Image 1: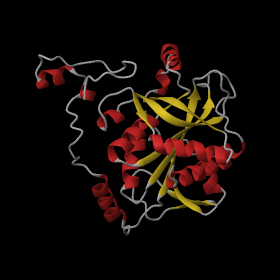
Image 2: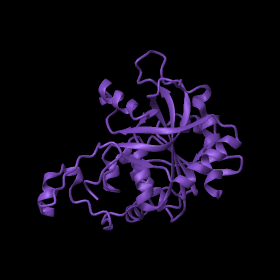
Image 3: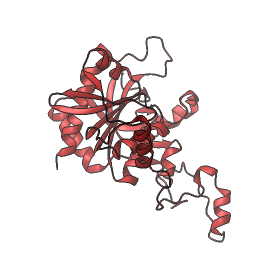
Image 4: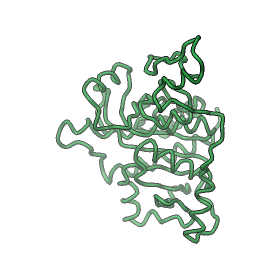
Length: 288
């Protein structure tokens, strides 16, 4: 799989027809060496949670079938403070808390402050072995498309893999993508509910403070609308593990290049956030 042609050639070719496999592997950067995508892992999330339950003295239980990542944490904080979210007693993760929220008959789990590709995928692995069936990520993002004005929601259909986590799940390629059938159902549901959600592409980076003028220009040239930190890895995980994951960018800023950035609207945009979650849950159950 290494060295296959990619859409724009971000991933270089390391192969040579006359070179041995071991020698080819040694010439790749460490991130691309010894990746046996078909082999099972030794360190498993279900085993980790087994030990966490033992140490925390938690009984076996299931999290809600729909779970939501809130990397910023402000939506979660608002719902907790207003009494609309309660701590889930069955979540055994060492690193995070999960909150139960109910909106219009939909019960979902809300997990705050899982920032960045490695952490987002770490908790995704644990959520899916704990009862989750649909994972939704709603992350703050920076604006790339100058024709648009934040704040707005973007359904991420494809994400540029400028991070490392996705390469542990799928062979190198330029993009990770939302499953096509699910994307179509989501667009239909957004229109049916008259939600102000755009669709497009994002640049997923591990290093937000290295968003240089040149890197931003390159992302704009690809026609991407936003820059964030989780989507490419979450979509790679979803494809490799055959799970349902949907990523949204809540585009709120222009990299703080101007004062007054990062505004989400009334109560951090909570009501629109919840409407998007409800629409996503409904669309995931529909069939075209």
